[in-house]
Image (cartoon, rainbow, N blue to C red):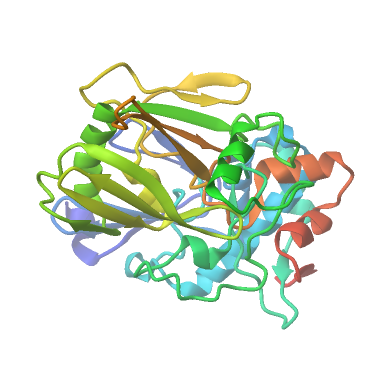
Length: 373
């Protein structure tokens, strides 16, 4: 198109600009819209605006506004601190951007008129979580904890060695009146207890379970293992045979599955990192058996999930009289990676009378809320 003869096309207006995408979605954006041709058949769409206006398009889409003013203020502080660090990280510099609009950064859906969220952003304007050295903390958030959180070094490891130390304010924590179990049997019992009290107990994701027949699990693994980057296979990848055993062989301090071992008739596979494990154990039927239902606490069961809700789970193997594996049940809790602020936990703490600053201090210990922008 001749529009792009001179590079980037920009559009700025006093009112929000409507952008319609090929998949049928359409959103409105404040500030400036930049369109840059990327190759022969694609465009990069960049929205440039102030950080505070950006947060108005993040906060109501990342946390339900029904969670209340205080929880939303904690969300705004966390989201602002995250964006602050991304600004300097330059992860998306190749696109001329600082963040993306998906969960790869934070969900941003452009201009949104929401008074409750706007009040939370305004009340915390310029405020971030700050460390003892004066740096803005690298914050993260997720939906629901199972009663425990994870350390950042337990979740993110490029080579699967988990050699990093992680930041002092991003370590595994307990979010309830209980101590971490010590054995696989104790972890299984912990997640099988759907009445366990904890900060996130009112979330439908606080406890969940899913069952696979051995045939279903074998069929799923044949595909997901081949697609996994953090998997080591011993044997013929194209013909490992039937699954004969499954076990979590390494956990974080809060129970997060960091390493999974799968044994087959003709070999074995080791999967590392919680994200890879969640994807490999995809609770989605392919061709065999009945639909696979993900059951949740006090909510309807779900089907078709691309990955497990979290890496906080324990395995229960089902075997017949001859000791042959016939099925696998996974009992777990939580939704998300487990690092940083739990949104349902923030809601609970706000209902207990905690301020936004106190909630931040709970989930990012050693930090305090200060105005830095």
